Image: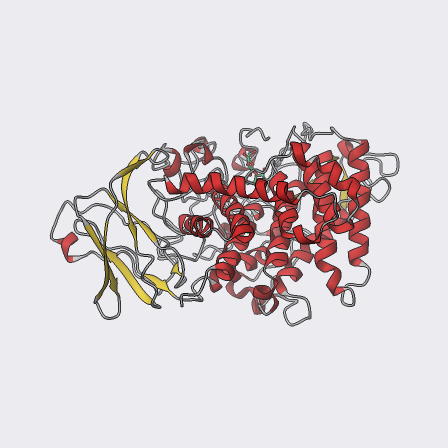
Length: 605
Ligand code: 9MR
């Protein structure tokens, strides 16, 4: 379990004017215009224009749906009995349905009505019309409706590469100079050992910037990297032919794995070869100002070896070892090296089972501190078991004591169950297959129950609105997908689709939280390159953290949040690191869920 500590980002906001760029909140960025130039903002229907009482928005997935998707929209609680689906090109009504009864969603303190138009399956562009309400955004029904989003959500990791020059051939207008070579990193006193005393110089280049900041954290890299590897492991065909136009494109290795390798190479350097321990993070002492990577030149340190870092590292390396084994001729020896790195990190963690992260007094960057390590032990043991088939690891997972929960950086036990379920037909006799199935199905069934009873037809509830709430939504979808993969219950897939809908617009803010995707999408993420690059649009493909009522950045923003209500407490402003930052552990489940929905949604007969 995780303690949601007050923001560690505040010191960054105290800085001002670095290299001519204003730093901190309220610097705006001058972004303007629709996120998707070709799309049209809500069309005002004749009914709406004729009535001054026309009320706000119909909320739906602003990209659209696959032909076989469940399709739902959320309509304000107006008096109308019906809704219509209208073909944009012809202006013809293609479907009319009854609106559900007005029902309250506590998280948004709002009563709404549901429109189910799942039976509309013909590809095309459409919108919804309800008397007394503005027409909805236009949306598309097409089998490839999510392919661009899917690619962009992976390309976002490329845009967040540490130690990389981004060439215009790959990055277009977002090309940038190399920053953070990380070849001259000092061992912080908190991480000193006999073999590597304080101020020893080590090299640990590459990796991804964690989020809107320029630091690198093993714990958060763990869940993010795993989620991408799992996407590949579960849906390889989708990624094998994908060209993301990254520097490695065109080689034999799929681009998703090329991108993941960029981070894995860094992670390997975070292990101390002398003892197997893993540094918790590689960071500056303070957050950088709002500058481009090459302008952020503070000394970097590796800070404290922790049990969580060793275990998350072990889990990821064990996973990567089996996923990359098929590329032995391109990556000679790497798979075996990763497995031995994973096992030595495990041995270190067993010998040092309770070293939690303690932020040193002179270090102010993110903590990713976590005092409950049972889930990290369980996850690492599960991945080591699957890769090595050694029964001792299965026992070490303590399956009977390990529940399945929606994954987050501080609670990773669900990841172990995901992997066990995927590999269930290829385990040793010791594995309890019915337990694996009941863990996955139990969690999916709980989520499905919430979804079925939700006024918004989503799985999010009031207490899910924590820092990075959009990753809770997508984590819930990931677990529903596992339920569907296990037993084919259609409701699980539909509930997972609902959560993709949620982040793309069927939420109480009426926004798509993915930069560049949706008519009304996040424009001002708390992301240093997007803010400091002088380009109006944000870099595309990043998902914002999302609404949460904590508003830990309130003092640092000179504009107010539009609402204090949990599901509406979202501020699309650069200053809002508590609701509008981007992060690798929030993008990775977007990659996973977008892939799963594309592969698993049945094609209508
Ligand atoms: O995602 C983290 C969230 O769960 C915590 O509540 C929050 C405050 O401790 O920190 C978040 O992680 C941030 C990290 O510490 C530094 N990089 C940016 C991350 C996203 O805001």
